[in-house]
Image (cartoon, rainbow, N blue to C red; front, side, top):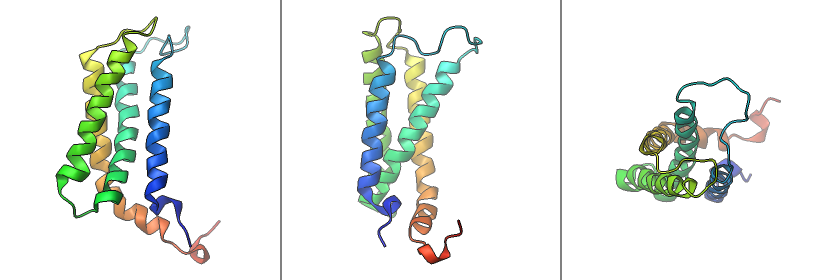
Length: 142
């Protein structure tokens, strides 16, 4: 039986969706709806979380394409580097968006830390993901 979670194209589609969503969110004039409570550094938490999701998705794709036993350069450092560049480009893009402040090194640092966390999390989760995706339908309990 075909399992979507074990198909690298599923993860590639998730990466593309993540990137398009990032572009959309970065194009918005305001990061939070007006009238909500002011929470200090919430934007850093949002940057970390969003890039952790990107790191998990890109890290999983890298593992599927290169293998769990591949060199750490391919499955860890390269995805982190790619996401670091995306984070820097996102900050630059935000500098042209009305109502946004771009080129914030602390936002980029939160992006980098989140991406690193997500990529590193993908490695121990990969075997679990493979087990879940290879379960036969007869063992599923609905």
